[in-house]
Image (cartoon, rainbow over all chains, first blue to last red; front, top):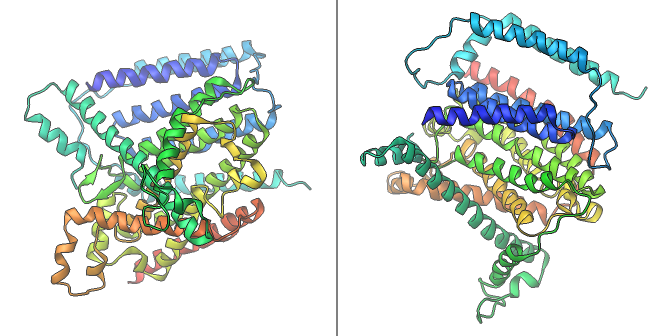
Amino acid sequence: MGENIFLMIAGLVIASAFWVVFSPNLIHSAVSLLFTLFGTAGLYVFLYADFIAATQVVIYVGGILVLIIFGVMLTNRIDTPSIAAGSANQFIGGIGAFAIFVMQIGVIFNTPWQIGNNQSRETTVDTIGKLLLNEYLLPFEIVSILLLAALMGAALLSRRN
Amino acid sequence: MTSIFDSLQITFSGLNLDLMIVLPAIALMGGTVIFLLMAVNALVAVYFERKVSAFMQDRLGPMEVGILGFKGGKRFWGGIGQTLADAIKLLVKEDILPNDADRVLMILAPFIIFTGAFLTFIGLPFAENLVISDFNIGVFYIVAMSSVGVIGIILAGWSSNNKWSLYGAMRAAAQIISYEIPIGLSLLLVVLVAGSLNFGDIVQWQADNRWFIFHSPFSFLAFFIFFISIVAETNRTPFDIPEAESELVAGWMTEYSGFRWALFFLSEYANMLIVSIVASTVFLGGWLSPLQMFNVLPEAWLFLDGPTLGLFWVFLKAIILIFVMMWFRWTFPRLRVDQLMYLCWKVFIPFGLANLFFISLWELLF
């Protein structure tokens, strides 16, 4: 049962990821990304990472994807339904993608995967909170300052004068 | 807190059926219940809204329409025929797709919005032990799933290929994303004090101490920030600028008709119910009886605090909140876009952050 659902979700993620890349219409790519991101959240649920799954939906689906669609709609001519995706720089992009692919294959085959018994379905929120505010407090604060700087930079850039 | 899903699974496990059959069957049953709830909710809420508007603004129509020979008029069922007629009309109406619209997305968009509302119901508690599936991260799950609908709104506006729709969609997206922040900040207050994201734990905390709205001055303020923000989040007057009739025809819904428009309608009223139930569970004690809190005849009223009456209390509180939202709608004029953004970014978010700081101090001191 679980395996079938996993295969369905994994299939959805891969199929929609293909459509993100190959769709001629940029908005259709963005919509397809919705299914990819949602499916990824489903995969997190399979890892008993409920908090990460919900965070994935909040940040990627509710935030970043909306920003992407907004960006596409605002930067192109929005009165034509088909916004074509450019296919320049295929060669350079291909090299980059291939390098990442080789790296990922290397990581997949060199990682000692833990295949064992079912994990208990305990909440992960407590552990994440304690780790973030004790052991990883400094990186957490540095990242938040970085984000704050980015926010202020964006506000500064978007001012008219 | 055991959920409906778990108890059904325990019930079925006695039948020695394959898990492959049982789980989809349970999921289907839960889904049917949610869908029926959404449909009935929309029917009742529309009737309620018509009557409220009629009482407040002396409208004649909603008081008159009868049903099947029963004349309406100034009786309590006056106007009830209109709701049924509307529902049938929507189902049999011609479904129009504009020529230059993006057909795939235009068909897909209402379903995305509907799915967002539908998924939210799964984690929503209606009473103690009456929740489809009980998540450890309940509050966060609701916030996550209700953010899915925005994408549907943007797609509906864009794919219609209509200026009004696009403006409406842009306004809706900006508004919903902005108001998610004060909502999150106010909910964080509760999570901070109760120490859990689970609805059951939050209500248990309120049972042990006091309702959250009366916990401290800061949580009192947080409730009002939350309530005004959810009115904005559900795109209702005075925050209905995405579908402002006098400027944008119907905003992002302009080109929709028939069943797909009915789906928008269904999700809109479902969202009202969802946010009201969240507000009543998180701030107003959920399934706890108000009589017990005010200590009116504590012994005699104890029978009003059982698990069966939890449903009644949750819905009573939610319906009162929905009534206030309707009251807003028929009383206040619409805000301008800049006023809306001012209210969110310069009033609610600073106050929300200050609230969060002071409640932390409060928790340290008391």
